[in-house]
Image 1 (cartoon, helix red, strand yellow):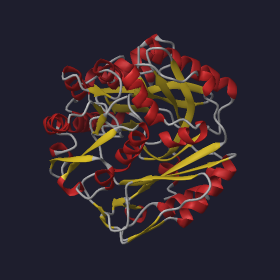
Image 2 (cartoon, one colour):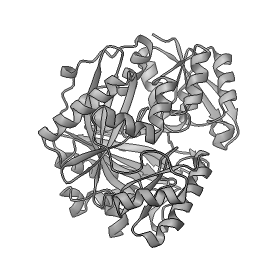
Image 3 (cartoon, rainbow, N blue to C red):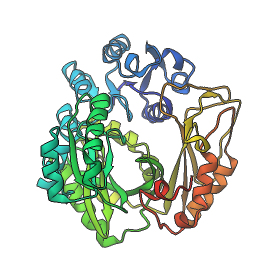
Image 4 (cartoon, rainbow, N blue to C red):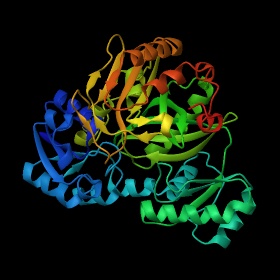
Length: 445
């Protein structure tokens, strides 16, 4: 096994990776910005290296500084977590050239599946249904209008080079098309350095379903699905598994096609294939070539440590799992706890945590990096921790989550804890009568 791994990330996911490494007996190196020197991941790691100042470009995205940290500490491998450099093909390639193991797929596969247009072509090639739209990236207005005439409104414009809701516009008619097309191009250029967008049919009431996979040279296995349909402006708030709306026939078809594609492209590591689901039909959305924020719900029902499996695949090249080893039990739900004020349009709420009491108890898990006295800075994503609860069924999982949220005390900053309690108690959530547009349309928040 690896002797030393550098974690190219921060916050709760860095803590999560350090814990998995310790269970493997692997030494860990934390990188951090100057404002993160007292962070939990720095405290838990065996070694730490400051790689720059507070702005991500100067620290967690600073490839030369991270390469220096690798050399300084003699790390054999790098775990990128999610976000930052986790899907940066250039970073993975530099590591490959320097004989440092990137815990994830090859740079070639990251680049291939990170290009949404190329990924769509690959999915179609291997039998996954895809959304009707442009065959490639579009930057010319006239060509864009030709695509629109073929598929009709409403349509969705998305940045070809990235995600996270940036450069994404919903267009309902031709009168607003030009303005929103140009706005999407501008945002795409600003956030991803590429003004190409692609256009596809927009679904009015879809669910967001994703399939977790682990793949080695020997085989590909799936760890069933997650339902991530409780979203606000394309950002996930609550995730759960299994999806309350799927039947076994639909699952079987979805899993077989997903595993086939992932296996055929020669994927190695943990990955997630995301789908839009509406009116009984699935459509390929994208593939994330990294671990997901919501991976704990899958771990709770399968009993499989996805991070440890990632590390094992990176070291051996193979997955130790057979499909028969994966037998999910019960239901799990995750709530993302953000340092935000829902009453003020989700304005970030940085500051010092003056009181922190985290819930515990039967089948209750907190993945976080906060503590009493911790200073939440304004420089990074506002998610400060995740609360995950498991039950024998969905009803029990909801009850346990509500009880756990009720125990969660964070003072000094404003969080989304009360919002989650409101959502869990909502009739539509309890009856699973919602879709990705639910919170934006009904203005529940």
